[in-house]
Amino acid sequence: MSDLATLEKRLAEAESALHDLNIGKQVVQVSREGRSTQFANSPDQIRRLEAYIAELKSQIARLKGRGGRAPIQLWPA
Image 1: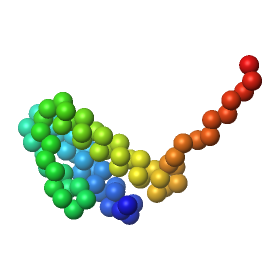
Image 2: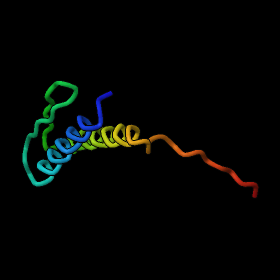
Image 3: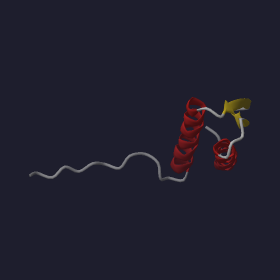
Image 4: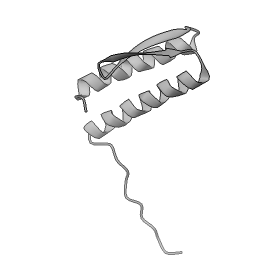
């Protein structure tokens, strides 16, 4: 896993790329794990980019101590 600053930089880049696709840019490029990945302006590619953004947000939350699931308490009826 990367450090917090790296993850936040990647998140900003991915969100900017998603914005570019949403305003009509046809292809965007995002650096990911030392590689460059292109995303096209298609529903499938946009969903892939959104999933990557969600993954980054989850990793950032864990590093900030806010990740994971909270325990569920069940009360008798």
